[in-house]
Image (spheres, rainbow, N blue to C red):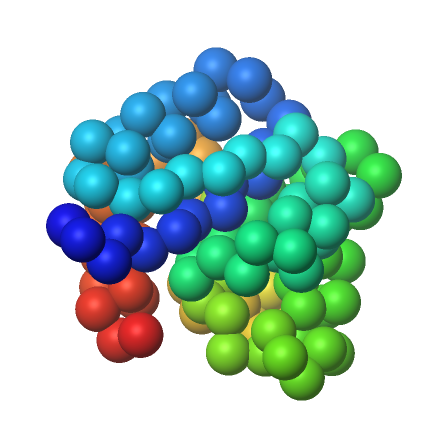
Length: 125
């Protein structure tokens, strides 16, 4: 893949972060990571990834707060965002979509399903 897409993965669970990074790098993506919401927002702004995978419950800023900040910034509005979280209640899913999430995956998740969804969203770029 010569024009490899860049994916930002933000999660405060180190083992999950390593798993997602490994799986996506195996698919040929450039993967950058953050362990809290503030770092995720800074990386999203500076590195301009093609897609972000954001955990909802993170220190410093939640994934929802990061998503909201990205959608409020016109230069980042088109960035694809997949929310990845253990919060599977309807109101949480609705909140993610109402803030502008492109997709929502709940934990535990299938790494294969994440790979397919990332690929589908990046195919539209």
